[in-house]
Length: 335
Image 1: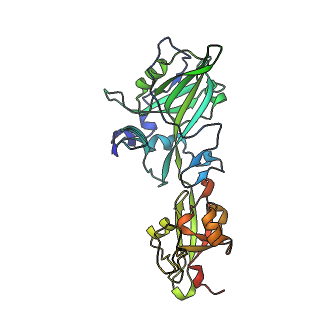
Image 2: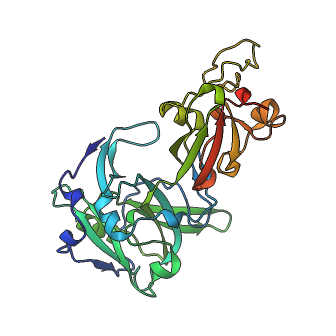
Image 3: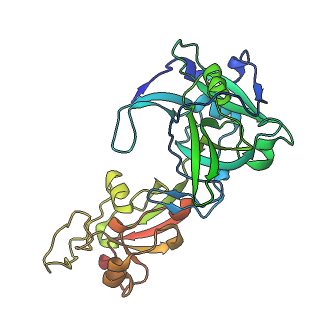
């Protein structure tokens, strides 16, 4: 991924004060845009699911960045095409002074009234290109305005798309006419032009991207006395696979005394969940792991409730933070 604004994206909020925040006060326009689709991964009305960590069970806003830090951390990157998205310029994040690892979340808010304007203040933090590329973020919400009342949009968010959805009926069947605009990595002027191109409507759906710090789980590792290894502490991000994360951090994990369940011999199955050489015992923090599925339940957990196959367990389940204590190679511990 190639950064688009190498210098501009390092600019602090104070340094871009020359870009005066402007309120989105227009409620409609007479022209209609072509339909440009954008992808939203979550909704304000439904629980959000995260890869590896499942559905969030905590208030994700506790991981939000304040406006000043978000303005420093946003960046734009030229991303190659994949099976999931087209090649293009997309918002990303970079580390700032406090060193927090960040991720970009996507949220969608439905049925925001346009009557009297949206009440969203925008600020351009990167731009100046002839092609209209830039980074524009929400710098504030008008008190009592539609966006403050009808949505969870917050300062520091970047609007990446809007949709007008109108229901049509011929008396026999119903259909929906959808007009969409994409505004990700648009300059201030390009963002305003795109919004003004939307047709008249009572309400609008808005999709934003939001910077959040990645929740972490602190794991204390305890080794069998015979291994003569000191206890160690590692930090894992919510959604990380336990086996993979431990191996990449140099943890001596595989238990040579464990027999494979598929063949009865010895050896590492390579995270297929058939050898159980990566089994660990959870002394504290079991609720921070993903629940066991049927195979693991039958093979391990039904017999040893505190044991888990590290290759099938993900930490920070529900995007939780916390502390865990894990005994490595539990077969080598005295009963």
